[in-house]
Length: 454
Image (cartoon, rainbow, N blue to C red; front, side):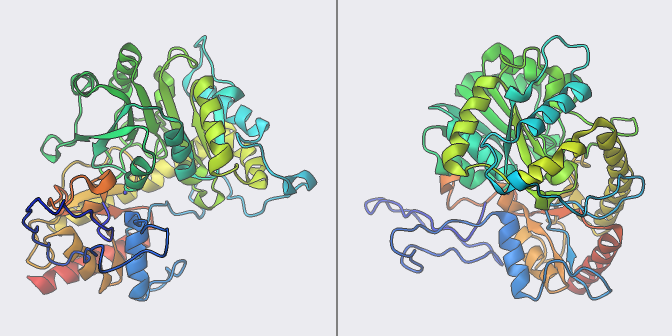
């Protein structure tokens, strides 16, 4: 989740480079002489969602105020609605803090939570399999970015593949650690962002990849590698000794799998939990709808878990002890099944509402989302002034609707593709994470906006 308010590195003085034309309605790029950092500090770019929320705040948006006809509609949000859902277990609204919970939690997390997470994966995905996860295969962190940052800090001198488009926060994550080299892998909208096992094998072998980082289901496209295809990805990683880093934070928001509470994970296809090069990231943030708890985890071979926990000792020091203890009962399988079934009922309906609404607006959705709660659509066919992601975003703010320009998902660590127009400059990500009433109101406002530009 590429930002446009960062400082680009100028070309060497002896090289003549024609200045790239600025896209209309994009945020102004600040050169090194226009805005200076304070002392020894560099300007740190804001991720896509943080950027758009900051701009919305300048226009009067206030988080948590979403009731009434005049309320803002936040289709940019990266979190699901967190209130009660029909058929879901009661929401936890209080946390008991024991005496020793005032102390630090272990960097790798409370042992009882690590055991509960391992048991959840074994019961959900590994029944009857001889190799099973244990607490030593789990490390707990204080948020999804913390989990990913620990893993990135523990990587060696390798080529790390990442897909375009993908989660905006990967951009700075892939740039801040200098041991590994990030290698972009292009996904094509014309192919529905499909990427076959043959494509995967060719990229690993041709680019000498030691690891690949991917969100699955994908944020923002909703593309989902599942079933036999996912099994083949895991098998390819095992055969070629390429570590797959699976961001599975949306793995309970999957559509078209059938059953009342479908869930999918690469853990289902791992043969040996301590040997297969598969590392999984998940947490309460999306799949349990508790983003504010900041309880997440990494699951993988014990050697990897030792490494990421060691990285956590100097990066973040560990997560919240009271919240980790409160998370343990949420891993009960019956609780998870009930919560996931409720998510499926509610979010499948909202998915259909969003897809139909965007199509009526003339926004082309490249592929109906197979997972997540996002639609990634092209606004290229809309009237002038709305036909690129940034101009659409700016215009939507005037109608109290927040979206995320697609260019932010063109993950570009180190700005190595600076001065080139993004392939996703005409795309926008629309979240159907908010409640149905907010979605309906937003689509109505966007319809008026588009008609006013016709």
